Image (cartoon, rainbow, N blue to C red; front, side):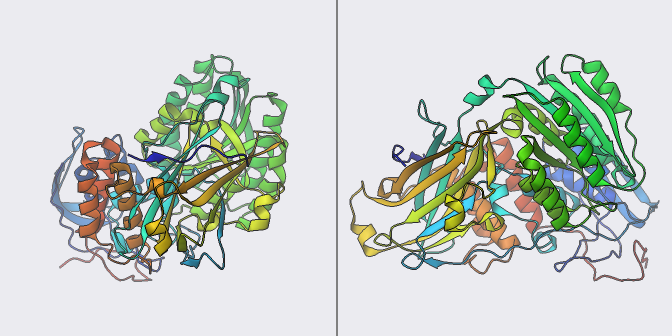
Length: 562
C-alpha cells in the first residue's frame, strides 16, 4: 500500500489470415498493413470493455483478400469467404510531437525538478485504438506513447486530502524493476472534490468539427451516440450551447438549460459532416458564446471535439497556440476531445488543450465516452486548481542522481515556478496526478533512519479563475521506501516499462515483454477490468500476427494475390 507523505509544511480468440496488402508508411517505425475485418477480430480477442463493437468504424478500410471467420464477444459476427471487400485506404497522415526523454541528472548540479501538472489521458486511449487496429510495438509512431498520460489513465490507492487541504500526496519507493542500480519512486497527488459542491453551475459550449474529415463513424457519429451520457449527468440549471465549424461557423444551439434534454439531443442529432475545416473561426465564435452565457463563480468551458485536421484559417501549431493562449485569460477554459484516425493531429489537439487551460482526452469507443461523460465527469470538466506547478527538491546527501519519467513537454524552469505569469496546468476535482522518477540513493540514505526526508515536493497553484497563489510542501523519504511494493506501484511500473519499450528508451535496461508480464501478474492486474484491458493490450502489441510490408509509394490499398 502506498504510504501517505508527511503532513503539509508551511510553504475472446480469433484466427486471422491475410494474403497480402500493401499500405503506405508515413512514420519512422512503419504503419501496419491492417484489414478492417482482421482488426475486428483482434478487438474481440482483446475484449476491450465497451469498445469491441465500435472498432470497425475506426479502421481505415482497404481493398484486400481475406480468408477468415470471426465471432465477436458482443454477438456481432463477421464472415468472409475469400471474396473481395473494396474501399480505398488513404495515406496515414497522423501527426505527433517528438519526445526528448529525460536522462539522469546529478543532484549536486541540479537539485530541482520542475514541471506543470498534466491530467491528460489521450495517449493511452489512442494507443488502445492503434493496438486494437493491429499495430505492434514497433509500429506505434514516435511521440504517441506519453507515459504520464498512460499512468494517469488508471486509478490508484492514493491518500485523500486532509480536512482543509486541497491536495493529498502519496509516495512509494522500491527497487527499480529494469535497473538494479536505482530505485523507482511513484508519487500520487490527489485533488479534493470540494469545489464541485461550491460551483455556481456549468456553462458548456460544445465546439464541434463537422468538416468532411469528421464523416467517419468513429468521429461525428461516435460523438452523437455518446452525447446522451453527458446529458444524464448534467444539472437542470446547467447551460449548454453548440457551435459547429467546417467551411464556416454556426451557432446551432445557445443557452439551453440542462433540463431541456430533447432540445439538446435534436440539435446534436441534426449535425452532418461536410466541407473544409476553419477551426479559428469556430474557436472565436465559441469564446463569444461562452462569454455571453458566462456564469460568475461557475465552470465556464469550451469543449472542442475534432480530429485536429485544420486546413483553413490558422492551421499551424504555433499560431493556434498563440491564439488560444491569448483567450485563456477570459475565464473560459478549453478542453479537447479527440476522435478518429488516419488524419488525426495529436500534436495540435494536445497543444490547444495545454494552452487553453484544459485537459485532453481521446475517445476511441462508446465505453470511453461513457467514462469521460459519466463516471469521471467532475474531474474532466470541473477545475479546482489553475496553473498548478510541481517541484521536487532532492537532497544531495540522500539522492545522488534522478531521472524524471515523462512530462517532457511540461518541463519548467526554476524561475518559471516562482513566476505566477507562467502558464502551467489545471487539475480537476477529485483528479489524481501520477509522477515517477528513477533515483539513485547515496550510502547515507541507505543508512539513515526511517524518518529522514530525502526530498520535498512543493505544489504551487491558483484558485480557479483567480489570482491568489497557494503553495504547499510535502516531505518524501525513508518512510516511503519499501521492500514489498504495493500492487499499485507494481502495476504502474509495468505501464512505465511498456511505454519505454514502445519508445525504444535508452534507459529501458532489462524492460521486456517477459518482465512486463511478470509485473502484471505480480500486481494481480487481470483481476481489475481496466488493468486487465491493459494486460491484453500488452499481449497483443507484442504478438500481432498481421503481416507487415514495406511501403510502396505508388500503390496505396493495392491487392497482391498469388
